Image 1 (cartoon, helix red, strand yellow):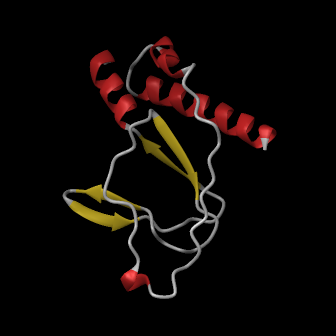
Image 2: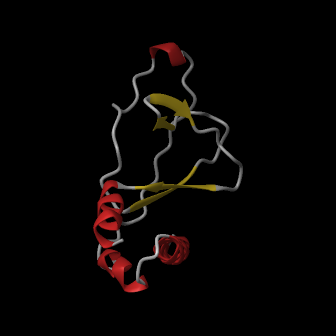
Image 3: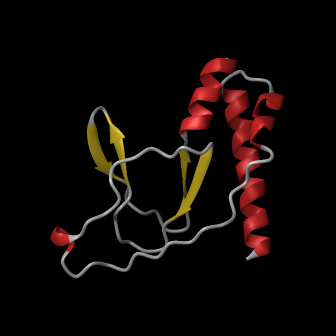
Length: 112
């Protein structure tokens, strides 16, 4: 687990560096996130036999800087809000979903 967590941290740092470059920011602007690493967290949600009765998380945004998700099966559940509508994120085998959180969004607004 420690090795996997370290690899995810490296990926996160690379993504933050690329985001800074794409936004025309100085790479040092992303150092604000250096100390705030959340430990690896795993959630398992088995398929629900009656999905119409399932109660999921209430709509929310991620307060953190960046969230990296790995969906390990074909079960849908993650949604994004685009133009006022909730759209399912179809799992892509072997791919990570990268969510930009509130802190990174606000930070980028004030540094570009």
